[in-house]
Amino acid sequence: MSIYELFSKRRADAEKSGEIDVYQYDHIPDHLRVQIKQISIEALGKPRQYVLRQGRDEQNDIWARVEKYYLRERGLDTLGRGDSASERILVFMRSCSTEEWLDLLELIGVGLDIVTRKSPYWREGYDVRETPDRARDEINYRLRQAGLGYQLEYSQLVRTDSEYLHGEVVKPALLLLSGSGFAGPREEFLAAHKHYRNGEHRQAVSMAANAVESTFKAVFDQKGWDYPSGARITDLLRIARDNRLWPDYLDASFDQLIATLKSGLPKIRDNDASHGQGAVPKIVPGYVAAYALHLAASKIIFISEAAK
Image (cartoon, rainbow, N blue to C red; front, top):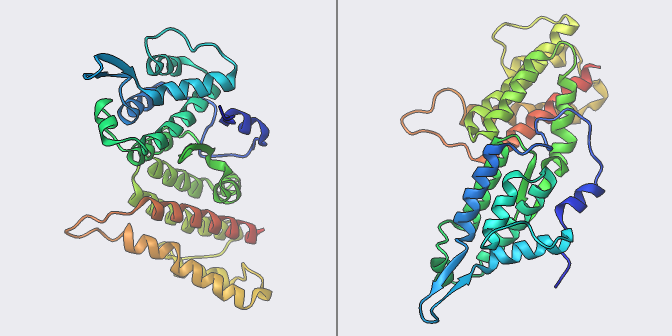
């Protein structure tokens, strides 16, 4: 059989980051273990089906393959007692270590890819009730909701901070906001992430925009620059420019940056998250909320660094 490089091996080869983060990576909450178990059963199917024509039980080969991959790569003979591969896997995942659980979660992602190639007859026989795409989406949602910094990208598990934007933008923004005088914007930025993890995308966009505005105000307070109590982003930008928060040598780039700040994050917030939603509720897609969080983080870094 082909060699499957487990997630734990790739993880061990990567450098660990010690920066402040909105996610944790070392503890699998009990409720999350139960949720992933339930999703897996619905998406990969029950352990056996009865083949009427042959008059015998037939084991679900996807669960069997997941177990076989894991045992081979881990150098184990068995996961424990159980009448089927699915039972042994799910019982083991209930109390195994974080690293072991993550390896098996990734292999469940491999199983989801295999389901896509199965016939409708096979899926019906093993009582598969969920599509692979919806199962993967729910798994990622449950991971975010639990604050666990991993997600399934098709058949591979990745750390969220291995994505460029998270590692290079979000975490540095949190680090900057941990300094003195930034308690307000830090609280709003963390709240935005919490809303995002809970699937509350409109609230996430709104809080991300608030965090940017509060970062401006925190800098102005430190520098003794006056601003109106109800100042909007355009007012804050004008004050920053009048006080030369950014150096003059930016020239055209400075104007482009102002345009980005004026038309980027505030535009999302104005269109999708504020000023009421009218008779028909507005739905903010997850990718819009993620963009707002990353854009907010980049602006927070820029404002904070410029203030130095």
